[in-house]
Image 1 (cartoon, rainbow, N blue to C red):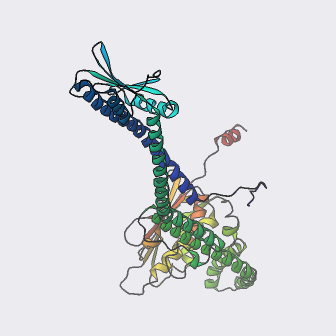
Image 2 (cartoon, one colour):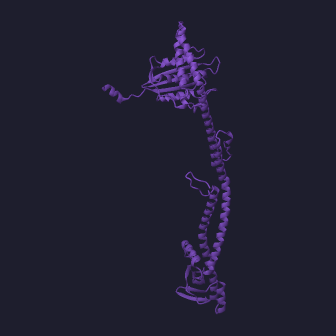
Amino acid sequence: MGKTDSGMTQGPRAGLGTKLLVLTIIFVMISEVLIFVPSIANYRKTWLEDAHRNASVAAAIIAETPDVPEQLKIRLLMATDTIAIAHREGDRRRLLAMAAPPPMVGSHAELGNESIFQLITAAFDTLINGDRRIMRITAMPKGRTEEVDVILDETGLRNDMIVYSRNILVLSLVISLMTALLVYLSLRRLFVRPVRRLAGAMVEFAGDPEDDTRIIHPSRRRDEIGDAERSLATMQQQLQGTMSERRRLAELGLAVSKINHDLRNLLAAAQLFSDRLAMVPDPTVQRFVPKLVRALDRAVGYTSGVLAYGRAGEAPPQRRLIDVARLAWDVGEILGLDAHPTIDFRVIVEDGMEIDADPDQLYRVLLNLCRNAMEALESNSHNAIVRRLAVAAERAGSVVRIVVSDTGPGVPDRVRQRLFQPFQGAGRPGGTGLGLAIAAELVRAHGGSLVLLETGAGASFEITIPDRPIDFAKARRAISA
């Protein structure tokens, strides 16, 4: 016997098949009872009509034959199981035959004038109280003007009704058992076994969700059970894929944590070399060293927070006013787009346009988008292909809109729905699918949005970032002070 979480023991559990069997028997028996009630009433009515018809024939013989011997009358009464027969015309009543002095009449049946409710009530009254009770039956036979009254013992009717009820009960039990068995076997095959298979598949899959062999194989059924099997198989496959992605994320985090320390040391060494380069008086070196230093500083900062996405999310934006064009050109220079031999890099921004954002985080967003566009443009080496990458920006009130567009092959349809999900939006071989997810998170932290525009050729990503909202209460206090 099993125990619940509270320690209480449970009784034997009735299976679904057992419940179906019991319920089928109960419902069939209820149906048989509903059939039995009017049938027993009809049986009593038919029995009384037959008894009255036989007695009416005897009454006709006696009435039409003068001087019928008393012994023959008694034999006719015995043949019809009656005690006395009389007929009445108007107010005149004449006794035709009597086997014995009639006892007191206990019940009366008037054939042809009883409702269905009265017939049912009278039938059960006969079954309960009809033993050794005298009944008077009255009716007018067809083709005659006088009414025939019949006196008989109700015990015979009651005994016949009991036999009929017993036969009906036995037949009902047989029908119930046969019907229940057939319904049980059918439901077991159609529902119980498939449901058990579904439950077993769930339990088995829960034991080792990463095992491909534990995914249920849907049957060819076209009903709700088949739909449930196919839905379960799809859910198991999706869950398995999700767990595989989470495992990749954990493995990536472990790998990055291992190389993070060594990478920081290498970058620190590179910073030392850049400091030495800064002392070289060559004009070209002096022009590029500040950019190299800024790139190394950003790289060191990235190595310190490289696990932030998987661990606790990005730091809140530290907003400043940024020159949009200058930031875009910095991204182009670090990627080598300003001097790229085949890619036409353009920055389409009005002079002096500013945006209220975190400079490092917005730089990372543009770097991810421009790098993706550059790699897409470099994926085909045909000389006739137009390779253009543009960063455009415009301000509408307190909102700045930045669009990074290219003339590459565009975003595949298979990744559009999951473009900004980690490990889901990789549109090229070797991609991790993290760049766009990180970019979207950084833009959302500014209260903005990052979306893919439907522009036809190439790919265009729109960054929308609003300015910081003004705290009017704080502004009033500053003015009043």
